[in-house]
Image (cartoon, rainbow, N blue to C red; front, side, top):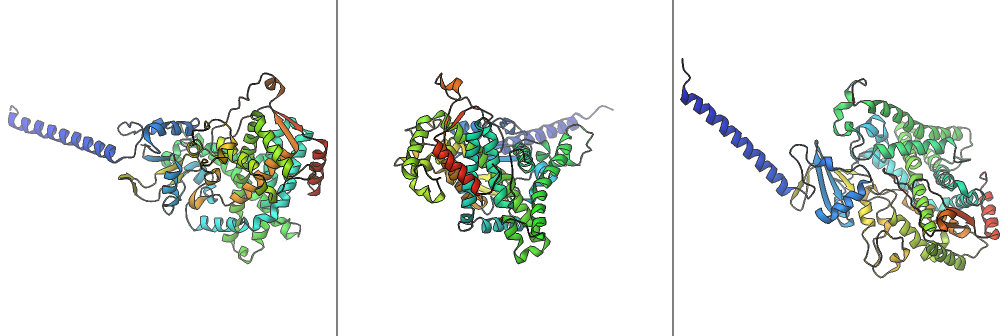
Length: 516
């Protein structure tokens, strides 16, 4: 029996109609996505444009895109939406004004869930536990409370400068030790003897691991969480072993010093600290409260010293490359302080040029060039564009830092830009986070930076190494890619300014009872 041509024609017509309707649907859907989407690089069907996400110093690429796409950039694909904010104005709009829905952190399957970092303030969602930990941190680090740490910070700054004078070759270790000593002393009341102390080296290794693990695209399991359920012998599951090692590192970071404080309190030997003060309160009898104290302290210990360490290294780079700036700051210090005593917090208001030097250090190379990403809790819209729930929002701190007036190039280190009638945005408004998740230790960190910088300027002169100084060239310093960006190892010359100043440094350093 021959086929009915009419029937075949009907089926062909139906198939063609379905194909046309499908194509029209795809076209209309794509058009609507394009029409109502935030600006961003050209996207391909299904995979979007997320493959254009840069992995090496992404803040540079995001900032360069600002010219073409504006101060809000949209990347999407593989079931993920990323919003990059390239100006202080847009960051304020999203993270400040809409903070109730933009204060969550991204769901990091590996470093958060599998390694367990989502138990501490940095990665906790915007929930009760986060609010409790932050309340504890704010209570212990208020403007009134941080005053009791001024003496310790001054003594540890002197101790670092003493190490610069006696062993200038290993200045990097001395900066690491100073940043670690400050945070260990304040958080746990634990003295640290040298840069190779287990608490210092373990924190450094752990924070380096976390810095890499929280970069966008670090693990496929963050995009496809189901991968965490696959057997470890399958391809692309090496992250499981990394997560196991990372979890052990994070738990050691949080548990060990906390247990040290508890043991000291039981024996009546614990030094005053953030942790011992909170554990002495009546609420600390409950397990939930002690858990919050432990993880709030661990967050301070892990992250608190990193930005200070990175910023002081950047300061040393800047002084070695800008001798005239260093001399001008030292002249101001000599006029205000003299040579017979060390700068203190009380001198800060009388040292405006030293203050703008610190501001320019924070601007020139931000320690966290992409801040810490946020996550949108629910659907939102901006300028007629729909923003999907769980979109990751990245505040591009680097872009803000590079937005300056035309008098001085953004790439130049020029503290005077902050003394003009229309200065750039104050780095204190973007270097420590935004909105409801701004760093609770901001005041403590600012005090540490001032005392460390002022003490170095008081006691030492920094210059390029002899080999570079003779040629007149500048240091060619490279920076790491990660959550925290550090200068890679570099050489410089550090010399004491005078015997009198060195004696003052040694006297203050020994007053604190710390090992020299």
